[in-house]
Image (tube, rainbow, N blue to C red; front, side, top):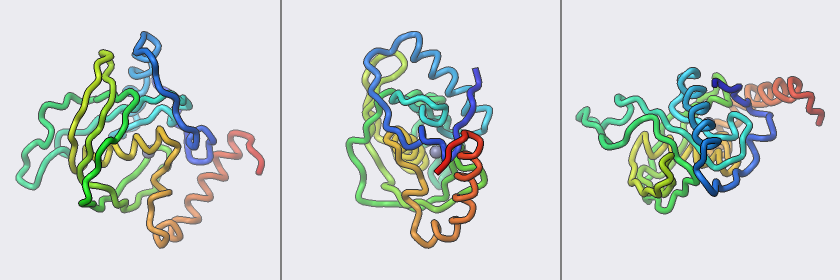
Length: 187
Ligand SMILES: [Zn+2]
């Protein structure tokens, strides 16, 4: 079932997620909803908070053409998309960082360059309940870092340069005000 995507200004986006103890039918149904919601919004990733849940689960749906090196070779040919990551933890990050433009389904029409480590090691549980470790680089590493941040209540605006955040100030505060009005939140 497609779920409503929560926008910036919804307090759930600042909540930290709780670890999932058992991968049961409820979690599998949640993962299915998240994949459907991500695909229908044409996103490359979605975290639980973005559909109003606070369990530690995110999904990644990287198109093959975004998972390539400059020679056009797949960087992670063994990864099946969409990927479901339960209780994900980034355990290692490279010193080398890269800058790339990011968007977020919770921030329609807002994009910004974000600096992140180029390579990461991620530990997580799959939908089959098995623990996994993956080394990821470039776009896949970036997408996973963005979603794991969501699970910790961290948003990409927190990682923008002060100059970019200043330039986007009006757009960001308008989005927040609109969401708060919709939700009946008064400040
Ligand atoms: Zn996002």
